[in-house]
Amino acid sequence: MSQRSERRGIHVDQSELLCKKGCGYYGNAAWQGLCSKCWREEYQRARQKQIQEDWALAEKLQREEEAAYASSHGSQSQSPAQPSQSQSSLAPFSKFEEKKTNEKTRKVTTVKKFFSPSSRTAPKKVSEKDRGDEERERGEKFQGRRESHGETLLRDLKGIFTQNWEMSSTTEESHEGKSHSPSFTRQPSLETDRVSREFVDFLKNLQKPGRDIHKQSRGFIESMANKKDLGADELSECVQDFYQNMSDRLMSHFKGSSEKVERVMDQVEKYIMTRLYKSVFCPETTDDEKKDLATQHRIRALHWVTIQMLCVPVDEEIPEVADNVVKAITDIIEMDSKRVPRDKLACITSCSKHIFNAIKVTKKEPASADDFLPTLIYIVLKANPPRLQSNIQYITRFCNPSRLMTGEDGYYFTNLCCAVAFIEKLDAQSLNLSPEDFERYMSGQVSPRRQDDADSWTHPSSSVNPLISQLHHNLDMLSTLEKRQQQVLDGALILQTELNEWQDSVTQEVQEILEKFPLEIKPRASAIDAENVENDRLPPPLQPQVFAG
Figure 1 (tube, rainbow, N blue to C red):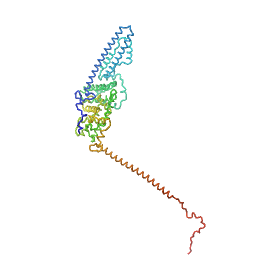
Figure 2 (cartoon, rainbow, N blue to C red; figure 1 turned 135 degrees about the vertical axis):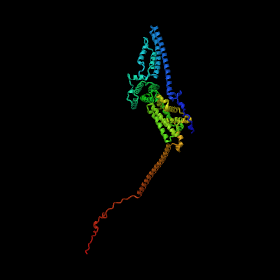
Figure 3 (cartoon, rainbow, N blue to C red; figure 1 turned 135 degrees about the horizontal axis):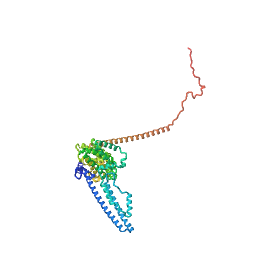
Figure 4 (spheres, rainbow, N blue to C red; figure 1 turned 180 degrees about the vertical axis):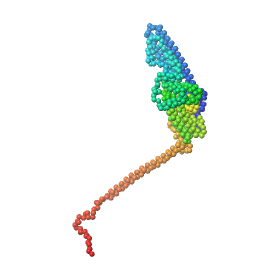
């Protein structure tokens, strides 16, 4: 009882689930404890700072290059009659140019990676052939003024930062000179077809706004085909920007009706994320897969953790509780089969509700938050859901932010993130164990189940799970039957030995009697007169005499 009252490593204050900025929304560990709104503000602030730093660096590099160009051009004009000296002075200058070019190229690539335009037309890039021509021209005489690398960098930055990020431009360009990606020209899956039909049927009821929504959604999906090289955070930013712009337009159209806007946004999210699922779920640019494997190995190593260690207020001896536990495990595993973030959240919500029902039936009173989190940890440990980290990151990046900030979906998802974080940091103190016992359990040297349940296994009582009691009874019966079977086998072997010995003894006795009294076989008996050869000497046979009266 005292063990259940401690809860040292499992208790989480509800204030810790909220955003660190104090806005009142639910925070997320993936967003450093912030809600989606505050995280986006911090991300935008950091991005603007990065833009300013890159812009200042570009101007600085341009000034340095112009100064180097002017000095080299001036030295060449002063000594035109010394070509050999000019060539020797050109060599270090070329090395200087090459070194600076590599640095600028790296900076431009970094900027483009974070701030790639959303339209289909990408800024012009310098090809390898043109770069080679420039290198060869740099070794010749400086004829005319060529465009410096600093100006090229500024031009690229201007092309990046002056792009129109509105959805209308994306849609207009999507109908001009389309060059569909192979991912969009391949045969769509059955689920994609079904979702597309449902999306069109839903938008038919909206008439003109429905056509605009469909047009903008298709244009956005086509524009995302050109952003496969972006990182997961940049892809998330593009999707969240589209959500925000679409939500603002719907809000103005429906005149502030949040229910209608939310219903339309649910369909938009379902359509977009079903189409983009394969390209944005667990992308290659992230380490989500590595985290998935680490989490699975961690949960497997913690297979020995019991309900008593986690202080879980659930009694699986009750059939209704056991049924809710099984349903909760099924829901959390089924999350990986869904494509839409909202559907994944629905699986988490359903799992959490089954957990609350199990606690309510066990305690015969409504469950509290302190009871819910340990039970959720226990369910995750028993289920070991596939690709857990990837699913959490997918929901975090591409779910409608309003769902994660408020409501029961946001609350349950935040608790799941806390449960995963607890599992990753679980130690001896969290389970009220000594460090020595914890290390022995983790190494597999001993199992707490075998030690703690040894008495109950040998002497079942009413407090033991009835399934365990029945199993114990069946094992006893099997043990008894095994002993009886062994006895029968031993008796059969003894009987077989006795029969063999009796047969041998009988055979030996018969042989001894035959040797002692040999058997004489007499000839076959013949007729009475068979050996009488002197038939002539016999008197004639008596003849019957008849006396006359």
